[in-house]
Image (cartoon, rainbow, N blue to C red; front, side, top):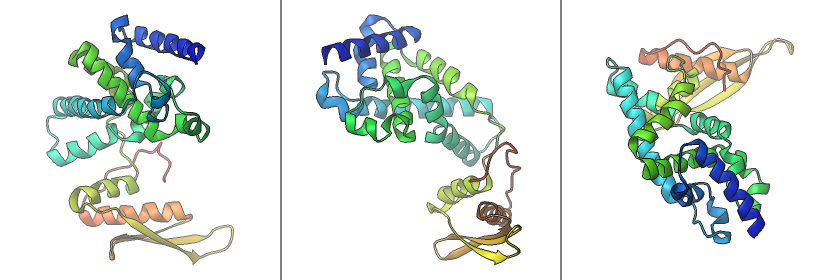
Length: 241
């Protein structure tokens, strides 16, 4: 246990040094990199309180960035854009690139079930590290970290696929999540045709067809957005869900 802790502390120390932290900041960074499942086995305490703080710091810094970068965007558009920056889908690859999954002190059970690569675990750890950095070095250092590691990696002109856009819109307006019913409409086996309807509760929002279930759902979501009068051009590099 002592040897493992010593090796782990050395790795955390190297990571912290790369962020410009001095030795006095190591206890907080060790806490940020300790998963709840390992807290009983270590003296550092787990990272959920730092995650709570980091979530608020992240929201503040992303909001500030969007406010300054897009002066003509209304509140709703800023809210939807912020949701993409702070989502697990955006944070988790950044956390993985920083090596946070391998650095995380985690209980054996969670480790063996893929906890180190779980999107929620990675994004939560990013927030915990940000919370620790904020406490150790202040808001300016936290802002620099977020700009360098997150904001510079997200293309603000890239638009999510139609299904994601519809979900964001529906949750914003009605606090509902869309559901899809898709059936095989016909066609030969080598060129099938699918038909999909998207619902908010029992209400049909849109319908569409496609050569696969995924494409039919995308078409239905596009139709629903068109009925709302807002169909942005999707990012051509994005694979439909």
